[in-house]
Length: 225
Image (cartoon, rainbow, N blue to C red; front, top):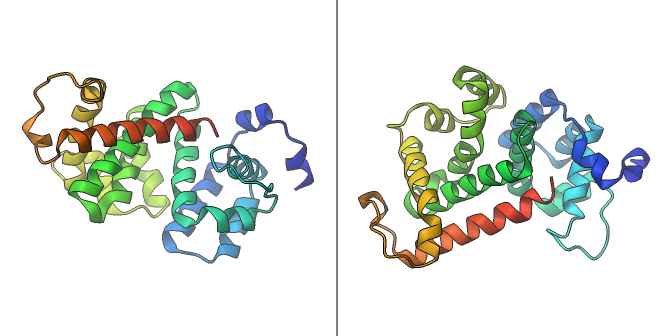
């Protein structure tokens, strides 16, 4: 841990992550492995450990006391938050030539897709987030490669179908999110625009909230990468 503590923030941002460890970690989180096993997997990659500690001690959480233990960090974050963050790290490592602003757009889309799912397909909200996160990766590395990565990580068939089949439940929701994200600016500023029939289930206040929260969450999280 001493080596990690000596790292400067700028050094941490440039750290390369071990993809095999990341995939093993995602599978362990999906399978609900014990906290100690999760911590052991994270500790296999000092760079991942450094990024996790940077996250937990960032202004994003505003802790009064610094956390220096991986187990403490996991316990504070919880499995769902940790899983979300690991997906973001995996995505940013696969899209390593993208700027932070471009990664922020990915995050905004993922949060927006999850928020829509919470209203329309609540039982698949977390899977919708994964579809949003990995959609740009699919475009970058190809459908077969992303399918192989997700299958290796034990990700559900719902997510894989959402990425590959536009007629699947999550595939349709993804297309709806693409329409909404293009309209968010106009919706927030109150422009009198005609919304697609597919968004008619939601009123404007709900859409404004979804757009704003997605933007704010993406902005906050990308600052920790």
